Length: 91
Image 1 (cartoon, rainbow, N blue to C red):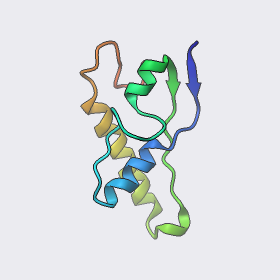
Image 2: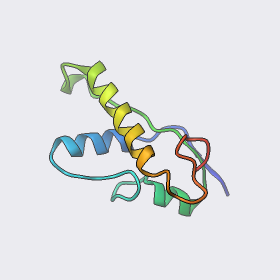
Image 3: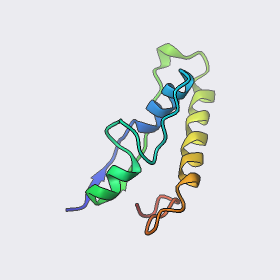
């Protein structure tokens, strides 16, 4: 069975944890979703959301851009995975 998930807050959670001095990564982490879990489960598509609690930031646009940059950096780091496309076309 191929899995398609239209919403995932993993990037936002990685972003928040890093702001607290922790170092989670997209490849493998203790959250519900990471690239290793997606590969093992046979994901067809995963949409990563950039979630912001507007009540917890005075610069939401800047924080969203930082999350997008984080996502792109994490995908760049994981281009080495055989059979995976860091472009988001296939994982």
